[in-house]
Image (spheres, rainbow, N blue to C red):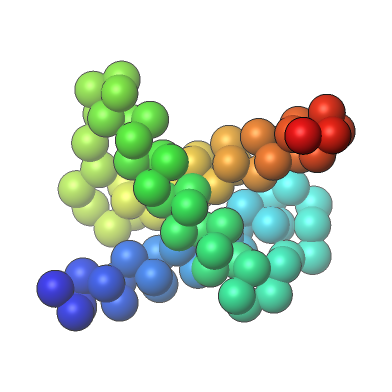
Length: 84
């Protein structure tokens, strides 16, 4: 369980970093990248399972986390613009 948690956090950190770079941001700091990546990992896993996809490899999990992080950032940006 402990090793799984470490990998999950490392993938989340890397996904947050990649997402920050893809969205032309300068990143959100290590903690911000970690939070965005972890939330994105959870969201990406949920969305991928919803459409019947599953990621088993490390690269697949990273792609899933980046997609989820990107969607999460877009959702947060939309809610900020709406004033919610």
